[in-house]
Length: 385
Image (cartoon, rainbow, N blue to C red; front, side):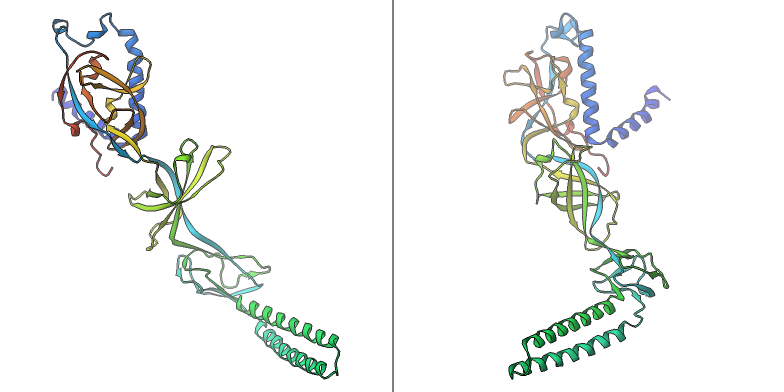
């Protein structure tokens, strides 16, 4: 096997690893390599830097470079942050009366409608006490009506009428309280959702109100929650569209519904929430999510990150060929880094970027520009990327 054949698997493996890196990591690696080359240039720079990389036998000849014409366009940068999925509504259903659990109607994981019974508790003598309260209420209604009629005829004082009225209201409140206690022996779902927790069993006893009966979550509306760096928080707006990528590869569309107005004291980041509608409830709570937040649109150019270089001052930029055939250097700002290339600001609307040979020519040098294909300059997206 030839050395070339032996290196082929290693080359393929290296390409796969490179494509697997996230866009910010690839950009960081490219800039780091450029910085190393820039520092090394000070050691190996020859006296004749103008002809660096040119064969001495042909140094008088005009060097040839390949260029591609790049036209700027409006681009929407995207911030990508990691977060987690949380149900929009999640309620701990708690016991409101004392007593023993008589029947567990639902099971953990069940999908229930609003008002559906989850647990029934022993009503004990609550029905009898309610009947007594209702009878007392009827009695007080009659007593009040009698006192009111007697007062109109002058046979009863206003004080007696007021006392009868107070007794009537007390009886009415007692009846309402008894009815509520009896109703609360059936614990129901506060809204349609899934029973996520159900720690009770038949025979469980609640000796005080507030004991946990169940936890119900609504997964038709979910939130993806993440943290955004302080340098980027001002570039995000409420109501803007956003995308959420799940571990299984699904991408869901949502809306930015919350931006924190105070940062985390430890991380100096701001909480952001994206609300998504999932009618089929197919996204479990707690999943890891990649949240992509679009920012304000900018005018930028898309090129391969491999074409970035450094000038003598260490500034990041690209080399281009002007209308006069001379090499130019443009300092740029990286707007965003994507699988399809890096977006830059700081270039003319239309410019000829050197795609091959930029490392062998200097700024101000006259070159022969050969047009190349823009498609070959841009990175090819990896499968599934």
